[in-house]
Image 1 (cartoon, rainbow, N blue to C red):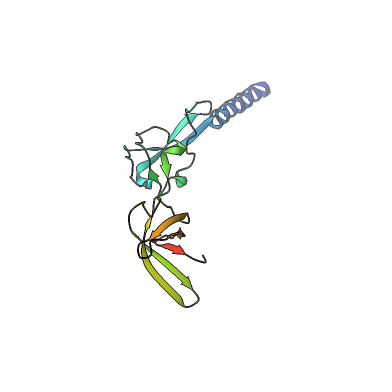
Image 2: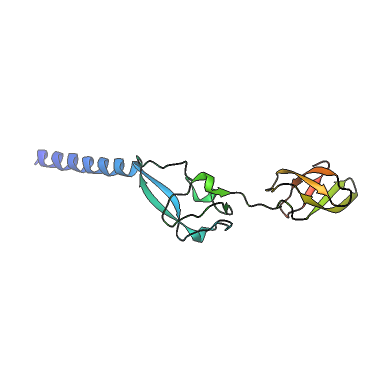
Length: 154
């Protein structure tokens, strides 16, 4: 009776160990549930988790967690069920090259506003060159969350 119990216990431990090692050899990655086109912004409803074997080889580096993707803009078409390459998504552009944007200078109690033309696309917090439409001078400013470009001390 004692050897039967020991055999059962050993078999149970072996099965549990195999199940644990199988789970350890999986990678759970976010994949699109629908086709996502360039320019689209990713939200949670567009993603699901997919299990890949640990030894699965991807052609390029892929996104590991869904929270990295939420709010990002797609640079190229993403197909349902396929892992998402890191270079396929980008931060959303808050200012676009050639599209007029407000310029703001604030110091102390003084606020000066104007309009300028960005010479490059810009994301939140990025420094961009912008041509002041009134003076024609090229200045550098930082992109804010509302699409304004702050110049001067920031």
